[in-house]
Image 1 (tube, one colour):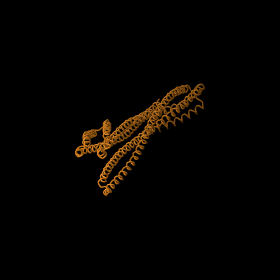
Image 2 (cartoon, rainbow, N blue to C red; image 1 turned 180 degrees about the vertical axis):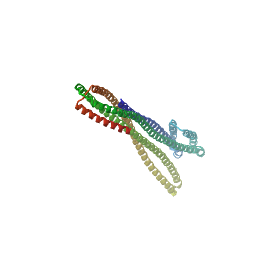
Image 3 (cartoon, rainbow, N blue to C red; image 1 turned 45 degrees about the vertical axis):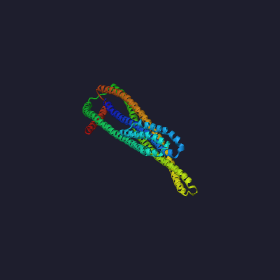
Image 4 (cartoon, rainbow, N blue to C red; image 1 turned 135 degrees about the vertical axis):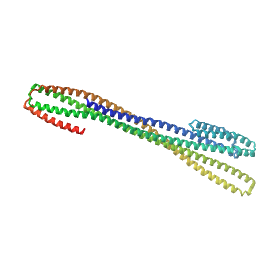
Length: 484
């Protein structure tokens, strides 16, 4: 029964360790899933806001350069006026998309400034078109200098400030997520250390509980060996042979041997099952480690996605700037071409001043060509960045799927541990039954030995050997006392 108690305590320690490891794994998995959802929501909202602001700024630049086109290209005035509502609609829709995201107080304040100055700019534009169409160019120029030009410049400035603020907020949120990941890692390490401390404490307590009954048993062995030695010395002069009792003793000992054999087999089966349980527990530990690694890889891939998206945003702004430069150069080229035509009419055959104008036109054309080449290069870089972003996103998705698969493998491993422990429990029950049979058989041996009233010379020699064994047992018990 004491052996069963020791085994039960050892299996209790083993089960406690499994529960603690499972608890640590569950905490890590739960917090990691929450961080993954938070990061996914952050990057989706950041991407939507960046694209909406970039589209709005692009449409705003088209509105601003509608004025010079309206002046130098009278044949396109109807087309320019018809494009105005479409550009207003595009800007309004993208601003609404941006407003639907999760904005901070600073972003909301900056967004209100953008809307206020943009509304002033939009309200001032129709009056300028009316003056220009009515032929009041001087009044239109003065009106433009006082209203649309400063309103437009201020609107562009506010848009740029809002874009910079949106990037700053995105960076801060990304830093917050990284800080949470570091805190989660620290929490898991501390929890694991705490679990080990608890397990070590339990081992010390159980070891003390096991040592006490062992010391007690050793003392009993010492006392019993002394009593047996005294009895053997007294029996050496009074032994007689009893054949029936000897036969009964032989039969009982045979039964005891068979029962002992069964106990040995069951003990071996119990050891195998325990080894399987330990192997499965080790497999569960590896699965948890692989899960943590998969999550770390997922974090790295998501970080790469954020970097690619920010690069894409910056390159888009550059494209807009270069496109604006090309448009400006085209307008100037048209103005110079118009001046050249007027000069040709005035000069007649003596138009030497045309060379200067033609030279300026060529310079502007060259600058337009260089700007167009820059636009082409930037477009290729953007396409490359987009391709890299798609690849990184796919890798992140595969990593997440791998993490799910590893978590499922962990669940299967712990299920196998449960089954192995069940087998150990059944084997222990069988061992208990066999031990009871051995106790009954030993009791029969003792009753048979009491019936022996005399002994032969062979029995005397056997008793002498028993006496030597008792002396050895007594010495062994004393050595155990010293060790305990």
